[in-house]
Each structure stands twice: as structure tokens, then as C-alpha cells.
Image (cartoon, rainbow, N blue to C red; front, side, top):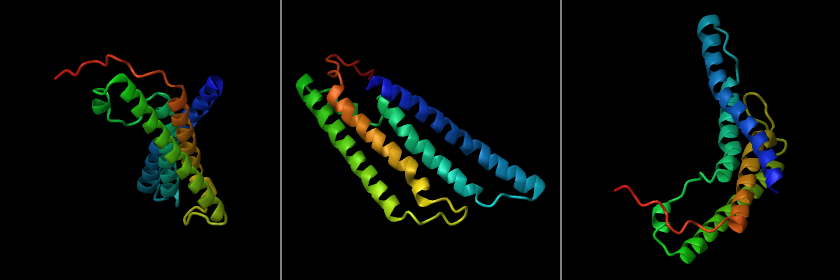
Length: 162
């Protein structure tokens, strides 16, 4: 499983990097084409929006893998070890389950609207929604995997500075 996740992480990292680069290159290109050549490209804003969607949702599993997802550890760190371990597992399981459910609902929505296309550049809706479905599904599975395989939380967390 570790090898599969590492390979998937490399692919997602590359895809996220390309999507992030598109968030820089496309708007700059649009400004240059519009201001200097008076030839803006119609629909470039929609491609930029899709680049943002790809960056956010394809980057989510990478955050889960690095254990950098948002959490409020200040409260949890003050609990006894057993309670922390139990609460951590419950949070990971419910979060992972919720993300998998949202990914399934997103997939069903995309399949129900398979003939729908975006208004400006005519991208099929299923393609437009696929980064969301993939990112949420993989993040959910990653959280469930962490819930089942994670080592116990540390017994002596770093004390607060203040």
C-alpha cells in the first residue's frame, strides 16, 4: 500500500504543480494578450478557474499524507493518551467517511449530468468535476487508512511556549 500511495503522490504532486503554474501563466498571458495585442482569449478565465479547482482538490491527498490537514490539536493534546487515541481515530474515520460520501455524490452528479458542458469553452461537466471527485475520494481513503494504521499519538507533546 505504501508503494501505491507513493506513486500516486508523485502523480498528484506533478498534476498539482502544473495546475498551480496555470494559475500564474494563464492570467499573465491573458493580460499581455489583452493589453499589448488587444487579443484576449475567450474562456481563459474558465481554464484558470479549473486550474484552481485542480490545485485545491488534487493537493488535498498530499496534505493528508503529510498529516498537514487542519485540526485543533490544542484541546486534544491535553487529553489522556487513550482518549486522544480514541478521539483521533473517531475524527479520522468520520472525516474520511464524509469525504468518501461527498466524492460518491459528486461522481453520481457528474454521471447524471454527463451531457452538460461549461458555458464558455465547452468542457464536459464530468471532466470539470473530476479533480474534485478524485481529490475528495483519495483524501477520504487516506484519512480512513490513517485511522486504521496510524501510530499512537505522542504521550509528551511539545509544551506550549506561552
